[in-house]
Image 1 (tube, helix red, strand yellow):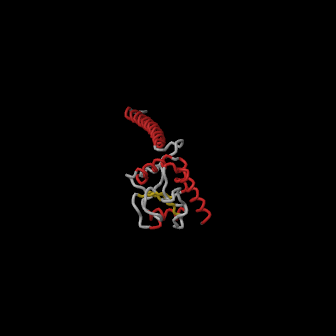
Image 2 (tube, helix red, strand yellow):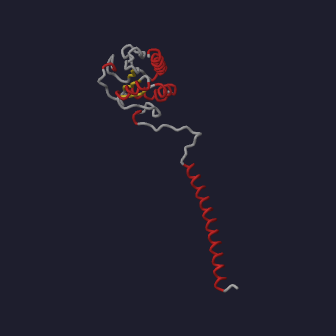
Image 3 (cartoon, helix red, strand yellow):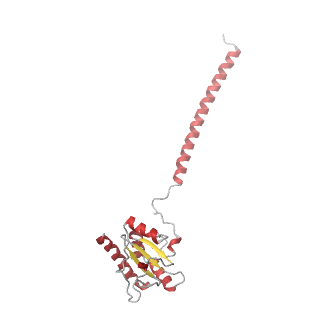
Length: 192
Protein backbone atom coordinates (compact mmCIF):
# COMPACT_ATOMS: atom_id res chain seq x y z
CA UNK A 1 0.00 0.00 0.00
CA UNK A 2 1.27 3.45 -0.95
CA UNK A 3 1.28 6.17 1.51
CA UNK A 4 0.69 9.75 0.66
CA UNK A 5 4.32 10.69 1.38
CA UNK A 6 5.76 8.02 -0.95
CA UNK A 7 3.35 9.06 -3.67
CA UNK A 8 4.56 12.66 -3.32
CA UNK A 9 8.18 11.55 -3.62
CA UNK A 10 7.42 9.73 -6.89
CA UNK A 11 5.92 12.86 -8.38
CA UNK A 12 8.91 14.84 -7.20
CA UNK A 13 11.33 12.42 -8.86
CA UNK A 14 9.33 12.51 -12.07
CA UNK A 15 9.27 16.29 -12.03
CA UNK A 16 13.05 16.43 -11.47
CA UNK A 17 13.61 13.95 -14.33
CA UNK A 18 11.46 15.99 -16.71
CA UNK A 19 13.27 19.18 -15.61
CA UNK A 20 16.67 17.58 -16.29
CA UNK A 21 15.53 16.49 -19.75
CA UNK A 22 14.26 19.98 -20.52
CA UNK A 23 17.54 21.48 -19.29
CA UNK A 24 19.53 19.07 -21.47
CA UNK A 25 17.41 19.96 -24.52
CA UNK A 26 17.83 23.67 -23.81
CA UNK A 27 21.60 23.21 -23.44
CA UNK A 28 21.76 21.39 -26.79
CA UNK A 29 19.78 24.21 -28.39
CA UNK A 30 22.04 26.88 -26.92
CA UNK A 31 25.17 25.00 -28.05
CA UNK A 32 23.76 24.77 -31.59
CA UNK A 33 23.05 28.49 -31.66
CA UNK A 34 26.52 29.24 -30.30
CA UNK A 35 28.13 27.01 -32.93
CA UNK A 36 26.24 28.81 -35.71
CA UNK A 37 27.28 32.22 -34.33
CA UNK A 38 30.94 31.20 -34.19
CA UNK A 39 30.83 29.90 -37.77
CA UNK A 40 29.16 33.07 -39.07
CA UNK A 41 31.45 35.46 -37.19
CA UNK A 42 34.60 33.68 -38.36
CA UNK A 43 33.64 34.31 -41.99
CA UNK A 44 33.28 38.06 -41.35
CA UNK A 45 37.04 38.54 -40.91
CA UNK A 46 38.06 36.78 -44.12
CA UNK A 47 38.99 39.01 -47.10
CA UNK A 48 37.02 38.71 -50.29
CA UNK A 49 39.01 36.44 -52.62
CA UNK A 50 37.43 37.97 -55.72
CA UNK A 51 39.13 41.36 -55.22
CA UNK A 52 42.95 41.44 -55.12
CA UNK A 53 44.57 43.09 -52.13
CA UNK A 54 46.09 46.51 -52.81
CA UNK A 55 49.37 47.43 -51.23
CA UNK A 56 49.30 50.19 -48.69
CA UNK A 57 50.81 53.38 -50.15
CA UNK A 58 54.27 54.10 -48.83
CA UNK A 59 55.70 57.48 -47.97
CA UNK A 60 59.04 56.36 -49.43
CA UNK A 61 57.52 56.50 -52.92
CA UNK A 62 57.34 60.30 -52.75
CA UNK A 63 54.78 60.06 -55.56
CA UNK A 64 56.87 57.94 -57.97
CA UNK A 65 54.53 54.97 -57.61
CA UNK A 66 52.61 54.43 -54.41
CA UNK A 67 51.91 50.77 -55.26
CA UNK A 68 55.63 49.99 -55.63
CA UNK A 69 58.02 48.84 -52.91
CA UNK A 70 60.68 51.49 -52.28
CA UNK A 71 63.69 51.19 -50.03
CA UNK A 72 65.00 53.83 -47.69
CA UNK A 73 68.78 53.75 -48.11
CA UNK A 74 71.30 53.03 -50.83
CA UNK A 75 72.94 50.36 -48.68
CA UNK A 76 69.66 48.55 -48.04
CA UNK A 77 68.81 48.73 -51.75
CA UNK A 78 72.18 47.25 -52.73
CA UNK A 79 71.65 44.40 -50.28
CA UNK A 80 68.14 43.71 -51.66
CA UNK A 81 69.48 43.84 -55.20
CA UNK A 82 72.07 41.19 -54.39
CA UNK A 83 69.77 38.92 -52.39
CA UNK A 84 66.91 39.11 -54.93
CA UNK A 85 69.21 39.10 -57.98
CA UNK A 86 67.39 42.11 -59.45
CA UNK A 87 68.85 45.35 -60.81
CA UNK A 88 68.57 48.48 -58.71
CA UNK A 89 67.05 51.64 -60.20
CA UNK A 90 68.15 54.80 -58.38
CA UNK A 91 66.16 57.96 -59.10
CA UNK A 92 67.75 61.24 -58.01
CA UNK A 93 65.32 64.15 -57.78
CA UNK A 94 64.31 67.21 -55.77
CA UNK A 95 60.84 67.91 -54.45
CA UNK A 96 60.89 71.56 -55.53
CA UNK A 97 62.41 70.97 -58.99
CA UNK A 98 59.86 71.40 -61.83
CA UNK A 99 61.78 68.94 -64.05
CA UNK A 100 61.74 66.33 -61.28
CA UNK A 101 58.02 66.90 -60.72
CA UNK A 102 57.22 66.49 -64.42
CA UNK A 103 59.29 63.29 -64.68
CA UNK A 104 57.69 61.93 -61.51
CA UNK A 105 54.21 62.47 -62.95
CA UNK A 106 55.11 60.74 -66.24
CA UNK A 107 56.85 57.84 -64.41
CA UNK A 108 53.97 57.27 -61.98
CA UNK A 109 51.30 57.35 -64.69
CA UNK A 110 53.05 54.98 -67.11
CA UNK A 111 51.51 51.55 -66.46
CA UNK A 112 54.20 49.60 -68.37
CA UNK A 113 57.02 51.24 -66.43
CA UNK A 114 55.20 50.78 -63.12
CA UNK A 115 54.59 47.08 -63.87
CA UNK A 116 58.20 46.39 -64.86
CA UNK A 117 59.52 48.39 -61.90
CA UNK A 118 57.30 46.39 -59.56
CA UNK A 119 58.19 42.98 -60.93
CA UNK A 120 61.83 43.29 -61.99
CA UNK A 121 63.62 46.04 -60.03
CA UNK A 122 64.69 47.11 -56.59
CA UNK A 123 63.68 50.76 -56.28
CA UNK A 124 65.21 53.73 -54.54
CA UNK A 125 64.47 57.41 -54.98
CA UNK A 126 66.69 59.95 -53.31
CA UNK A 127 66.34 63.66 -52.68
CA UNK A 128 69.98 63.90 -51.63
CA UNK A 129 73.31 62.84 -53.10
CA UNK A 130 75.17 59.78 -51.90
CA UNK A 131 78.88 59.54 -51.16
CA UNK A 132 79.30 56.91 -53.90
CA UNK A 133 80.96 58.83 -56.76
CA UNK A 134 79.93 56.10 -59.19
CA UNK A 135 76.35 57.35 -58.93
CA UNK A 136 77.21 60.70 -60.51
CA UNK A 137 79.65 59.82 -63.30
CA UNK A 138 78.83 62.95 -65.31
CA UNK A 139 77.76 65.34 -62.54
CA UNK A 140 75.26 65.93 -59.79
CA UNK A 141 72.06 67.04 -61.52
CA UNK A 142 68.42 66.11 -61.15
CA UNK A 143 66.43 64.35 -62.24
CA UNK A 144 68.64 61.42 -63.21
CA UNK A 145 68.19 57.66 -63.18
CA UNK A 146 71.07 55.23 -62.69
CA UNK A 147 70.94 51.44 -62.85
CA UNK A 148 73.08 49.19 -60.65
CA UNK A 149 73.26 45.44 -61.19
CA UNK A 150 73.35 42.86 -58.38
CA UNK A 151 77.12 42.52 -58.71
CA UNK A 152 77.19 46.15 -57.44
CA UNK A 153 78.33 47.50 -60.81
CA UNK A 154 76.91 50.88 -61.77
CA UNK A 155 75.59 50.52 -65.30
CA UNK A 156 77.23 53.58 -66.84
CA UNK A 157 76.42 52.17 -70.29
CA UNK A 158 72.63 52.57 -69.85
CA UNK A 159 72.03 56.21 -70.69
CA UNK A 160 69.30 58.56 -71.84
CA UNK A 161 69.32 60.68 -75.01
CA UNK A 162 71.19 63.77 -73.83
CA UNK A 163 74.93 64.14 -74.46
CA UNK A 164 75.43 66.73 -71.71
CA UNK A 165 73.34 64.86 -69.08
CA UNK A 166 73.70 61.16 -69.86
CA UNK A 167 71.32 59.88 -67.17
CA UNK A 168 68.63 62.55 -67.46
CA UNK A 169 65.10 61.79 -68.63
CA UNK A 170 62.19 64.06 -69.44
CA UNK A 171 58.48 63.19 -69.48
CA UNK A 172 58.65 62.64 -73.25
CA UNK A 173 61.45 60.04 -72.72
CA UNK A 174 59.30 57.28 -71.16
CA UNK A 175 59.85 54.98 -74.17
CA UNK A 176 63.62 55.42 -73.80
CA UNK A 177 63.41 54.76 -70.07
CA UNK A 178 61.30 51.64 -70.68
CA UNK A 179 63.85 50.43 -73.23
CA UNK A 180 66.70 51.10 -70.79
CA UNK A 181 64.86 49.15 -68.09
CA UNK A 182 64.60 46.22 -70.51
CA UNK A 183 68.35 46.54 -71.22
CA UNK A 184 69.10 46.44 -67.50
CA UNK A 185 67.04 43.25 -67.18
CA UNK A 186 68.53 41.54 -70.25
CA UNK A 187 72.12 42.45 -69.41
CA UNK A 188 71.58 41.25 -65.89
CA UNK A 189 70.59 37.81 -67.14
CA UNK A 190 73.44 37.51 -69.67
CA UNK A 191 76.19 38.87 -67.42
CA UNK A 192 75.49 36.81 -64.30
